[in-house]
Image 1 (cartoon, rainbow, N blue to C red):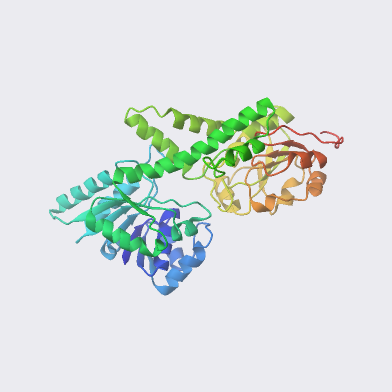
Image 2 (cartoon, rainbow, N blue to C red):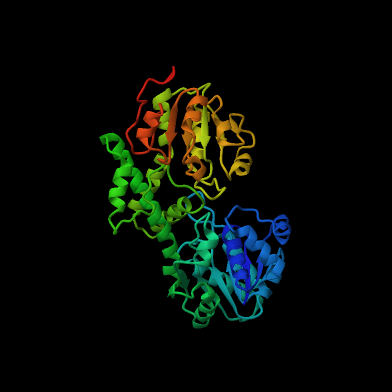
Length: 452
C-alpha cells in the first residue's frame, strides 16, 4: 500500500519505518532539508532501539523514501498520516498549528480520494477540525473530492517503540467512513495476525482514549509518589508497600514505582492538554490537576533532601549525577527530573558532574553555556571531588555498582537515590548515609569518614 507520513520525528519515523518493513511503499515528508538528507543515507537523528536498522533496511529496499516536497507526498499515498508535533501552548493546550497546516497542504494538492490519519496526539475534536480545514481548502479551489479523516493514536513507549508498533496491544481506529475503516483494517492486518487487536470507534472517543491512557498512567505514578511522601513521615518503607499493592491483581505492578517524578514528551504535555480540554468544557479536572501538582513537587524532592543534609547554601559543593534522560532506553531530556534538580543545585551555588549512557549530546545541546556542569565520560569520573552521589535514571549499569569504590571516591559517603535502586540495609553496611524515595533514611552501621 502507498503511505505518506508527514513528520519524521519520533512518531512519524517509527510509523514510516515499520510500515515500510512490512512491504508498503512509504514516503516521509519533512520541512527540514538537512534531516531529510541524513535520513536518505539511513542516518537516524533519534535514539530508539532497533530503529536505525529498520530505517537503513527501508532505504536500501526502496520502500522508505524521504522528501521535502509536500505535493509529492500528497500525490503518493492513499493514506496521509499526520505525525507532526503538538507542543504544549502557554495555557497547557496542545498547539495544533502544525497539524492544521498539514491538513491545509493536503487540501491544496489532493486530486482524488485520500484517507487523512491523525497519528499525532491531539485533543478531542481535532479530526473534525482537520476535516473542516480540508473542506475549506477544497472549496477555495472550487473542487469536490471525497476524503475521510481517521483518528489513529499511537501507543509507543520510548525505548521500545519499534516493538510496540510491530506487536501492538491495541490498534485504535476512530472513524465512521466504511471505506476508510476497511482500508485501515487491511493496512494493519500484518500487525494484527494472532488476535484481533483493532478497535473501531468514533473519532472523539479515539482521541480521548489516547489522552486518558497517558493520564491514567501518570496518575498511578503520582499516587505512588503521594504514598511515598506519607511513608517517609510515618516510618514505612514504600517498597514494601509497593509489593503489597502490586500483589493485588486488580492493581498490578505496572507504573507503581515511586521516584523523582515523570517526564518526557508525553505524560506532562498530555495531562496538561486534558486539563485544558476539561476546563474548556466546564468540567473540574481535580484529580488531573492533583496529578500534575504532585509530579511538580516530586521533581524537587531530592533537592529538598540534599538541602536538609548539607544546608541551604550549597556554594562550593559538587554533586555526582547518574542519569539525565527522563527514563532509561532513550536520550530524551524533555521535562526530565534531572533538569529540575540540576537547575536547583546551580541556583543554590553547587556544581554538577553528570553522566548518562545516552543523553550526553542532548545535555550539551540544552546546556551549552552551563559553567557549573561537567559532563563525564563514565560514571566513575562523576565521583571525583563530589560530596555525594545522586541517582536520577534507572539505567541497568547503575544497578550494581562497586560501592566500595564509590565510597572511596566521594568526599562524603552519601547517596541520594531518586529511583530506589539500592537496598537500605546494604547501604548502611557499606557505610553510606542513604536517602531514597519513601524509605527511612539509613545511616552507616559503623562510623564513616570525617564529614559524614
